[in-house]
Length: 257
Image (cartoon, rainbow, N blue to C red; front, side):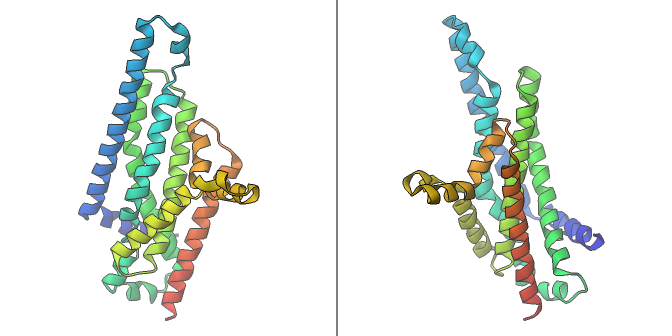
């Protein structure tokens, strides 16, 4: 584990000496802040309208989680879909471009340790990114009365989605020395996992079930509603484990070339 933490620390430090990390952080928070403001403004306007027209039944149905946090978290997934490849593109492609991959692969460090270290470093950076967005939940808790449990499960889902994106992006980064190619490849794969369930209703029943299960968003949406199903958690953990396995095998093949 010492080697894993050393590699993770090296990766995390390299993020904060690169302008890309700050651009991603600023862009992510700016877009998330915009969506939060839009949904909160819409919620406030609807509350005011129902109060003016004296419709207490409609006011009782107004829910901060359903009308602000859930759509915000769903839009955050779309933002991550675009920005996560920028975080993962350099994980190993940069090593190959700078010819430092030979030094890393010929060291006595196991390829699994390299893979886990890279993944952990990017994962910690993502936790920083995610932690900055907790201010939106804090605002709702301070001025309103949202369901805390639903917010927690929503962020759990967002954490699992982000880690899945990182694992898949790490795999594409092991395949090339070009960071742009790694980023585009990661985006295509992430988009596939995001949209694969869309045609589920237009194909046969069996194929529809398979496509629906493979769809990442189908496993994330229940968590934004406060539902944590074991099959959804297993899905995300399986994606992460499989992507890390592919990354490790890719590095192993480079070691023996």
